[in-house]
Length: 255
Image (cartoon, rainbow, N blue to C red):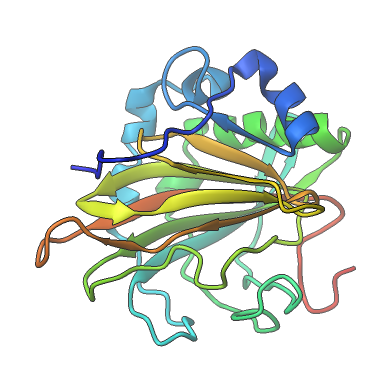
């Protein structure tokens, strides 16, 4: 059960208004189910999305947390999305510059790859195509270099930090954050700030498959720590994070 007390609901945008909202405000939130949610945008029925849930139950521990925490599990994969074409790339390390990730930037992090059954799922490829089209609407049609991250943040040691680096940008063009599942937690509030001003918005993703889309050049984002709803009971927050970058993947020698 998720924490439903005093949650600020996200401001949802319909599929037909998504590109306009993203271009105007620098972010938009898409509901999960129905014709006007992620299900409709990607043409992926909710039962097909829910078939992916076991992938989050098999995530290995993140061995790179420099705050000493043991609360994060993840997998990582890389793709090139060009129109309706999705090409899975050879497994590669995840890298960010220090300017964008003061805690973990400047190091190559070698995470375990996505499971093949997810990578080859036609529904997965439809999702990448649909969200890649949002990047093209925002920046112009072109190939997109996509990094996919499956995350589980748990409360086994009392607290879990979805964004231990704090409020940040990712050094890409478009970031999408999809809530997959909340279980037995409180906290985990999403916060989006305009990079050029102090204006911001806060809300909590609670409904599965709700997705936040972020113009990474214009907004800064973070998610607050999570705690167990009941002491001694397990709690976790599962998300899918996709980043879309023009002209190549980030790396030590990337422009």
